[in-house]
Image (cartoon, rainbow, N blue to C red):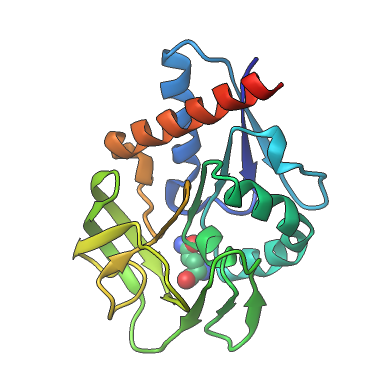
Length: 218
Ligand code: GLN
């Protein structure tokens, strides 16, 4: 049975080469002999997270995020269940922001997120966080690129994905990057992130384990 990957709103959420994350995962899994199917889950489409072995949600500009955020609410329950049961998911930048409670943009509007993770994101005029990043993550060293105006803050106990060496990550104060909750990773890293092959390989391990577990249950 093929490994199924859901790419949420691929046509709208794909800034700075984020679709490369999915291409790298597909390439690495195929090299190991797996068949891999990638499906774009876009506006208005039906979606059952449990049908997939991996879910990817890329970055987007405020305009696209506004459109996507409304449609995304339909998938809150299925995504919450998927994440809480420990299934693997990667969300980058704009996608990461929408998994939290809200994102207050530069124009002052508040975009509602899914509220699956207790965090929120706010625009602050002091800086746009743009440039190279370097950090030590739970899966090893990462070198990437960030470009966001939203600053992300945890509202309660959450574990970040990495500790900054260079760049901003979640916000200019905390010195941490992204979030690591069960097998959900949220990150501000573009580049794409998974050109850091150590990180891509960790994701492949999680995806294969999840795929096998599902096959046993079927
Ligand atoms: N629009 C969001 C921000 O500026 C996310 C940007 C992105 O996904 N690259 O913070």
